[in-house]
Length: 266
Image 1 (cartoon, rainbow, N blue to C red):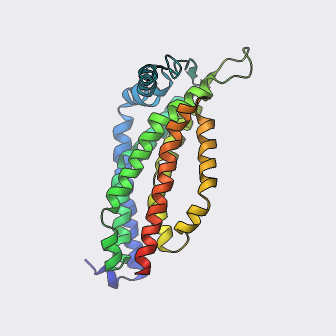
Image 2: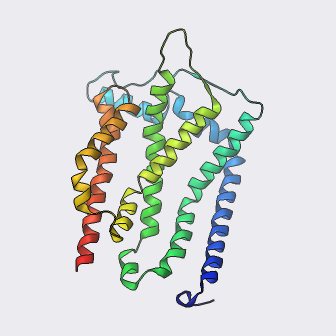
Image 3: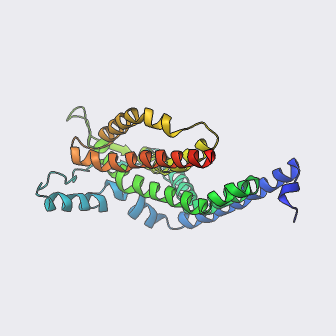
């Protein structure tokens, strides 16, 4: 095996090619695993957030009674039908959803492969400061995916699935639309939760500073509030459930940026 410090440009390309191949194999293996368990995946995972018995709805309803709000937070009005209007619609959604879930399941390994390729280019001091990067990246992504699935998705499904402009218009949702909305929310949430990691690297190269982030803190606060208000029912408690973790990530990112800047000044 060649010393990576003496590798040529073509050697690095070859190394990258094998990283990509191994990552793709991991995605395909996980995709096949998900594909063959289609009934469990669709009945108990993908279509579960449309049911009033979904874990989030039941937990929120119990919390509502616990704090003396009665049924005020019980979001049990998810009553729309999911249909398929294309001949190959269900089959294509089966493939698409299997690939997305396969990517999520294999994400820790993919992140490890990316880190495996990047790590040799770092200096000894940078490697020391970056210990545990694979664990942090994987954990944040998985936490973001779970947040998107258990928090963003049920609130969005409840709002969008029951919203109507007239009593004469019934909500009959296409399967492709439902799955696309769910997977988009889950993946975007996973990426958003990588904000501390992005902040770390952007601070390392000087594109982000704690001063800049503190300057636009109020703007971030307003944006997060708007997003929370859009995807939740018109209830302050529900909005805070969404707002708090997103704003907490922003504050953590400021601390990370400040720490990076202090280390660079030493």
